[in-house]
Length: 155
Image (cartoon, rainbow, N blue to C red; front, side, top):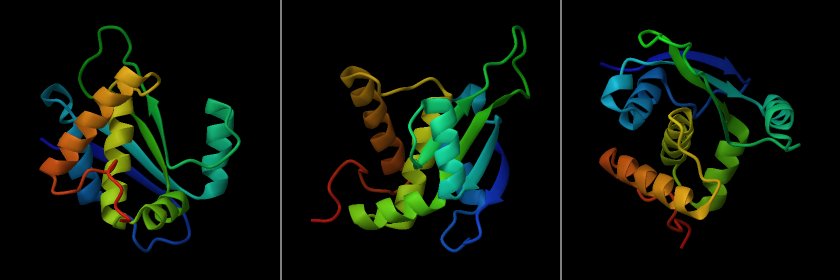
């Protein structure tokens, strides 16, 4: 089974954006078997919307690459409940990929997986959690044929 993606494009420039099939593959790689048919909203936004959401929900007044909004299911509901939403800022992702010497596809894949792991409850607030989450990201991306996103690609 593949995750069900509700894709919203809220950007004018659409060159280089991942397609629905890529998003499903990347999200599916991060999901455990019990969530493989999850419903996930994916919204690709500009810097203005990203900044607003980041300011309103994380109290950081700047655009960011990915925001995750998990939906905790109501008590007793398991099937067909949305796992959550991912909001990805296309201009920030493009800028970061260039600055970090990564392919755009590899950076998109990394951030989609990173955001999906947040929907599943992973975090990187402390060093131990960050190591655990990064190791899982590296393992998942390697399986998909992408390089370690934490290794300097520009050298």
